[in-house]
Amino acid sequence: MPDGAIEAAEQAFGRRRNVDRKSGDVKVVRVVSAFECGAIVNPDNLRNQIEGSNIQGLGGALFEAIRFDNGRILNPHFAQYRVPRFSDTPEIEVEMLDRKDLPSAGAGETPIVGLAPAVGNAIFAATGIRLRSLPMIPEGLPQAHPAEA
Image 1 (cartoon, rainbow, N blue to C red):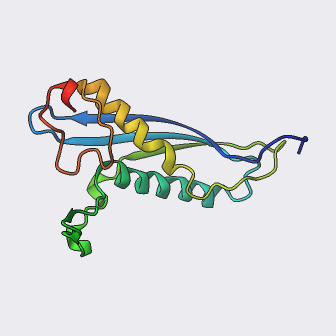
Image 2 (cartoon, helix red, strand yellow):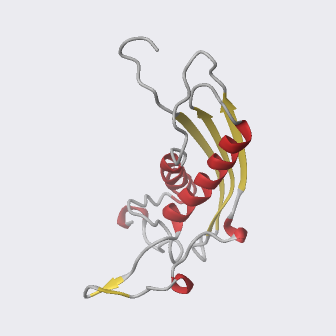
């Protein structure tokens, strides 16, 4: 590796979403994830890691939240903690860039990072509502004026 070079994974996201403006329901129906982490040693494992990280990122972006009231956790059981279900899982397309000229870099959970901003931008493009905290829609989109969200 050249002096001053950094091992890193790079990614880009695309997404398609359905937004029901009356009910506030949002469904991500397709995610395209392009990923580069140097030379790919095990493509099947990497693809599975990227897909799993996308689903995990979807949970953090849209659903997962610990609810508190005066320091007391209101949803202490998994039955009360919203995570992505199979019905929430979008079509996931993974494009992997195999860079034989670079050493392998960790792929791990890197794909989680880009999903929330991509989903937030998709919601904004569809509604004009900019959501600035996670999870974005635990109970559906706010029925607010775009400037209020």
